[in-house]
Image 1 (cartoon, helix red, strand yellow):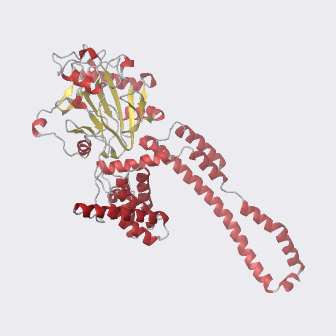
Image 2 (cartoon, rainbow, N blue to C red):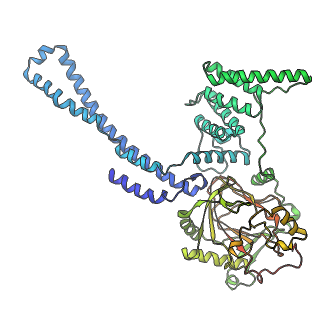
Image 3 (cartoon, helix red, strand yellow):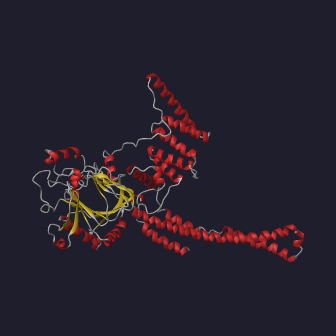
Length: 555
């Protein structure tokens, strides 16, 4: 057993050693935890077998001693009158009982504890648990799922059944509470009460749930219900000190409220036990539009627009490599022109790129618009890595293919970025191009003036590259996604769904070099599935004759 454990530990060091926590940001990395847990279960079962063998020996000894002592204690003097019995009694107490003591004290758990202790340093952290809880809440909000639906695991496209216990729901509510999110605290603590009232056993008590719930509804401004829940809590636990203090405080606030009502001669709205609380407004102005598109609602693909969308074979403007084997091209949107290409990457190429990327995956970052410093953000939940052509021939082959399809040069493009989305993985609405003007001397009118006035505080994030702005985006879908995970354009009302082996392409800049603000887009949270993508960002330099400037600023 020790040999097996040590070999497994060496293997898992190689897999988990490169992971910098934040497991929840990449399903690809979370799969490693499945194998780690499987190893721990096997180690635990081996420990149990050893313990059971030990207990079997102890039980056999106890049964034998019980039978013997029942006879000897019935007639001690008569039993000891036989010299062999007298000898065996002395021998047992001097030799055999100490041997049993050694057996009982034998530490059979050493191997399992060693395995567990070493692997624990690679376990998810409190940050991971909080991130996973917030991911479920994000899915709950984006796809308008109630807590009961998630608790029952009734999600579309699911292959495996999964349910949440009352204690799981309590953990969700507690995570929300610790994060100052009282809206979700209420939703999940109410779900705990629902499941417990239905007869489910739980470690978490009703008193604990009501403690969190009463304060959360108070923070949401529902004083009447907070008072009612606190009284229920005290009926279950009259000695609850904090609840007693809260009750007096709530009663005082309610009395002050009544006095104000009397003085103003107005009528207060009475809160009920079935209070429905509004989701707090957050920092994203297009939140409702964005989330509606993620659900497939509000897509502005009108019949008139559909008539302008076509399918064709794409020869890459006469590119020799595509004359014999053109790609199937499909219009996804007319203006700005967004197209999808089919069979861009084979399953073998996708698998190889994932193998190359996985050891390098790190939490995806965004650039702070004011400081220009890369940092992690809650609105981008994924892990990414960058692959060079020298890493493997397949990377160079895929790069050449993207160049042939787009007619743009990859010499000034960024490295191939590979991303894997985690639990509820997303990237909220953003631009791929830098909004800071490259030539402030041209800030005279039109888009350039708007750009300068609105984004003059931002850093020129691509200046150090010397290749200009990101002129275009080529996005490869390397997996199917059972539910969620669409690429949406809130300003357009467009939604594009992942399909393995396909790719979508659009220009981020107008021919004038100005940013096309209609291309603000987002990666919707992954509801069910594992989303892998890779993308190539083409830059302006080197494209002067491949994509010439237009005659006007808005071409």
